Image 1 (cartoon, rainbow, N blue to C red):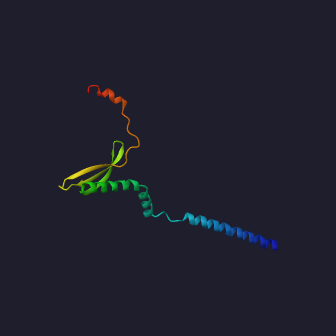
Image 2: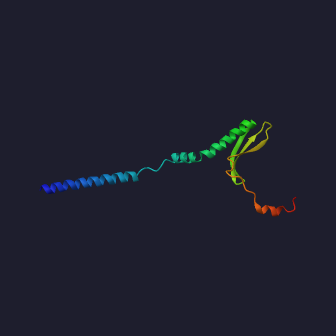
Image 3: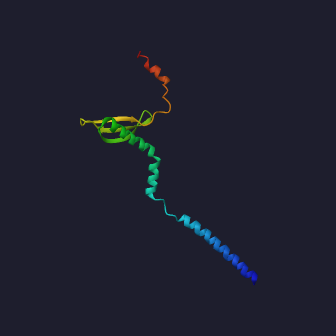
Length: 122
């Protein structure tokens, strides 16, 4: 009789332990999906250096020209991205100023096949 109650106690303890592990596993599986606002903030943080560079370009153009800023965008130019800022000068004309985002890490090497194309130009 003593053996049966001891065996039942062990069986109940094992059952409770298994249930606790299952409850923890199902609780973590039922966690709500990540908040979309938080995901957007994380994406913005990853692209922050690019945006900061664009906003720095806008501030630079504002300081140097004193004009009203109409817009800014990053555009590909010569194999890299530059910041192009659209502004209105003091006469009311719309102008663009290109602000290089980052200098190249290495200068471009001249193409060797271009020499044959310049045969008629001294």
